[in-house]
Length: 116
Image (cartoon, rainbow, N blue to C red; front, side, top):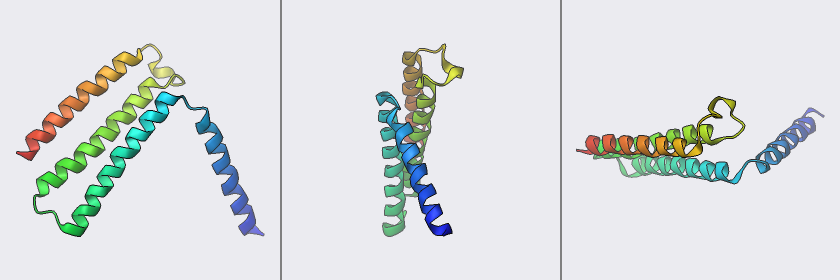
């Protein structure tokens, strides 16, 4: 009896999440895909390191930190661009994107410096 209730609860949860995400604007969905791609790339690098080894360890760290840092910056962009977020309602989306690009530039300059 409890098992079917848990299954029904899980299905109801997934249906409500799917319905809520369907109402999400397209630009936020694109940013979500970008974040997912960055995290997926970091996971691929970690799996590669686990299988092959991490001889140039600074290269491995640079790659993973670049992916994770880009994902974090993209999440910040998503927060600023979201129209439902009242905290950033006075900021235009162009400023949020400019911040994203500038911070990515600084991040990747640091990553390139770390590579040596």
